Amino acid sequence: MSTNVTATGQGKLIVFGEHAVVYGRPAVACSLPTGARATLQRASRSRWLIEHPNGRIDADADILKAGNLLLEPFGLCADELDIRIEMSIPLGAGLGSSAAMAVAVARGAARLLDLNEADTEQRVSRAVVASESVFHGKASGIDQQAAMGSGFFTFHKSDSGPVAETLEVDAHRWVVARVAPSKSTAAMVQSVADRRERLPGLMESLFDDFALLSELGAQALTEGAWDVVGELMNINQGLLNAIGVSSPILEAACTAANRSGALGAKITGAGGGGCILALAQDDDDRLVDALGEYGDVFEFTLAGRNSTT
Ligand code: PMV
Image 1 (spheres, protein in one colour):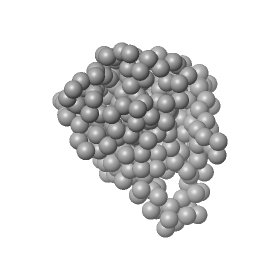
Image 2 (cartoon, protein in one colour):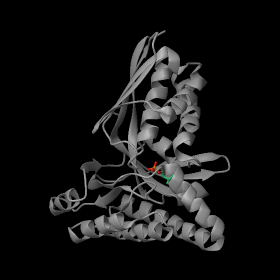
Image 3 (tube, helix red, strand yellow):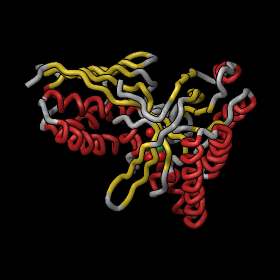
Image 4 (cartoon, helix red, strand yellow):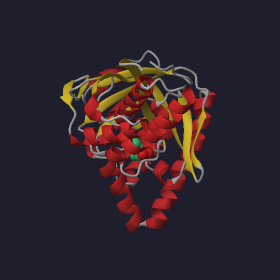
């Protein structure tokens, strides 16, 4: 049995269809080439340390709760482990940090037990679903899919479980800006559920529009029709505003991105705050400069299949 192991999980960007994916509609996402690296060590004294781009934190009550749910399928307990997680993406910004962490820790737990590959994937999946429920409430599972690393993919929930299909997409430049403090994903998902409760017909019709956008978006991505991808991202942002998850600052940042050469811009993730995603034109630095006025900027060249870090 191993005593000291490392493992990784990847962050994600949702390109089309967030929130509607919780209600069974398809979405399009991409795993980032970066995310979380966890080091697990058996120890007499338990410690969870998370280092991220803006500092370090010791685990809070939610993280410990998620951690114990995560370790349960492996018959392990947080009390017997020293866990250090290095994040290369910001926490709670809509980039899938919690799923990236969960996948890294769960894969590490499987390595500590020397599990075989088939057993590992099954238990990692079960563990991450349980731990993500702490942060997401009613989660669709799209973050978990991305955290396990599949490049661009379409995703929807079905009666028989999640369905993900890989998309072949040419490399392109994408820019992410963290423009506002993040809101809790669970709270944003709940706010959409509340609006759906009040306006069921209208919300279901908007979710259908998200579904159509995701289908058209997947097609445009695989065809490399970047102008169309950008246009659809702007329409997706209009729908996110309509379901109540945008804000004045998120709208202003999207407008600034489009005025500075982006082909399209939208919230990525649960919204309320957090990050926007802009589709860049190659070699145009105006976009990065404009979004730098709003907060930290991250640039990614993303392609169909990103390898695990
Ligand atoms: O984890 P976030 O903040 O990127 O949001 C996940 C996307 C949602 O569709 C809002 C929720 C979900 O579980 O699919």
